[in-house]
Length: 288
Image (tube, rainbow, N blue to C red):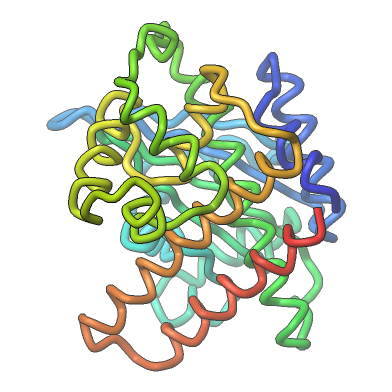
């Protein structure tokens, strides 16, 4: 798949086009079903679920059941993780939810890959691709699928917030200081905070301070989301540089998660998978 295919999903101009783009991308990844859900937490009230995808109409009622979602092990895991993971029948059996798997498997939701992005203002974007056949056994292919879904989620969440949240965007009113603009332009070329600090003869702490301010202004919680917002506001770079800078920012976010796993003493397997995803993202986009 070309990187422009991922970009086009994020630039969808309508919910219908957004849904069609997701279905097309899922098909290219060899998955028959795709679902994207924007979750808006309401505090003491039940959360609002806004979804698009190609879930069969006959399964829609069960699929959207809030009661079932509270028991669903995939939904529980999506609330805790921000990296892609695989689900199958065994996961449901281990969580005493075999009945949920039996019901969804009839409609082609036997196994798949899912990822959740946790956004500011108690919003969450969930993306999953599903199919009936078993997933590839080849580790390299699976790592590629995980990386592709992560990248698709980054672009898709931007379209979901813009098209589905039904709130007027104030991104166009954001004003960056000259220093913030300078640092964002360097970040968009893939430079790290340390490299930017050396270029500008300031401390890495000062660079991080400006990046945090930019993220607050854009109302984002990660570097790659800030890059996407900056691109939308016109901080343009040549096309190849734009594609690589999004990949670089995303890879840095994944690497930060890997370091958190290490500090928390998580199992080596989780750390290994994060390392694989980081490398796969670089390979996926380095040739663009």
